[in-house]
Image (cartoon, rainbow, N blue to C red; front, side, top):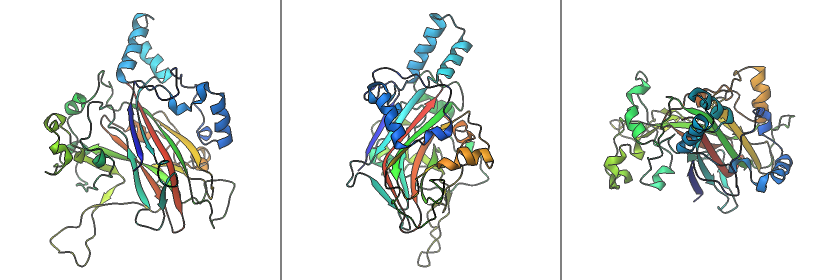
Length: 368
């Protein structure tokens, strides 16, 4: 069983004594995939030797208090105070970690060419819903049940009312319908360490092990079964939203195909549509090809990213460093709503290929 950590804003992370001011200007995407030697040098030069992921994570009240200080002590108008907070990237955040280093061998292995070649690794807490919690951690750590919906239906037909979601959020509430500003992925992993694929000057070319970002949303039309752990929870009535109500939007779900021995009256259950190759707008990071050394990749998706897919810029700044070539336009982050859940999937394709996963961390930052 991996170590799963959910940390909400307001808690100082280990080894960090003071809040970290985010660097400015923003780093080039190519700076997010550095050699281990460069990362080691930076760690030795930093305060207390902590990595950048061990910074102070504000909660909504922390952000509100800073805004109040700027308005009252600094005599700034509210609009200017908001600009300062955005410029400093002082946003509320949550952190979710899946640590597999305690497993035998020090990692989780996903092997290609087998039924488990698509592996659900973690899901974040519902965005900004600090007062929502799953009744069963075991259920929360499992992949959601694939569900097929009517393609002609509007997504709003399935969504919980905004008032229901806001009742589970920590005040002050986000002012925007889509409040997320950035998502940061920290992944430590490697492939099997050898390959018959031809080498190239790009370390990630021809790699068949990678990580994808998925998306889930609470669906009010889903009926919670009688044996659901949420129904056994005495606080179920006040919880309003059961864990079973999570519906995956990506990976997509498709209707199952019944076997010849199955009764014709019983429809086959839905299943995930896991594609063969990385999806350009969901691929977080490829592993380096045939590298026996575990590599740490930090990937940052921002709402204000502006790299146009299918352009030389996307190829040079994203694909060349192992990122999905369509993940630099900010669409994934800009479309996140209150209560949305981000998932991470590990992949391996073809016999002989293996994705050795040591640690996955996801931090979600949103404006309030």
